[in-house]
Image (cartoon, rainbow, N blue to C red; front, side, top):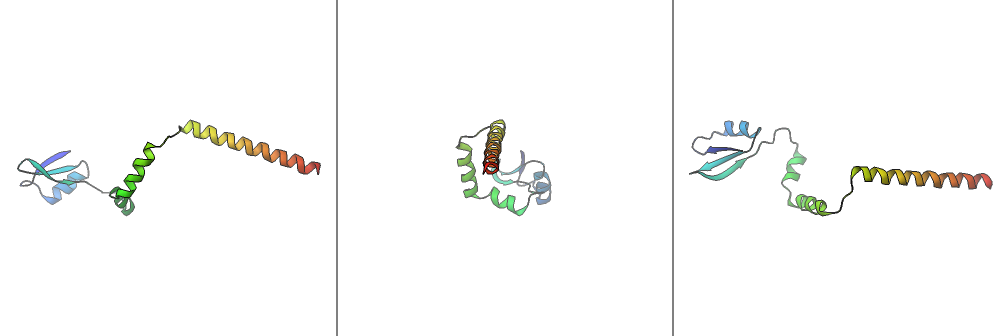
Length: 97
């Protein structure tokens, strides 16, 4: 994070610097503004990044129990095996009838 005194700050310089790191503008040594670069972000990213409802949802989701990717893949494979077994039983029953 870069600190720049208000007296020395120019908008152009601060905007350019903010694309690499956050720029804190100070007045009398105290922070008064923060400039964050957004180059490369689209409108949706900007809206979500500043949306309290979105961050509340993310916070709640992060508190929920999770499973690893390996466990997820194992669960999917088990479900697929069950479907294959079920469909083979149906095929056997239909050939008997």
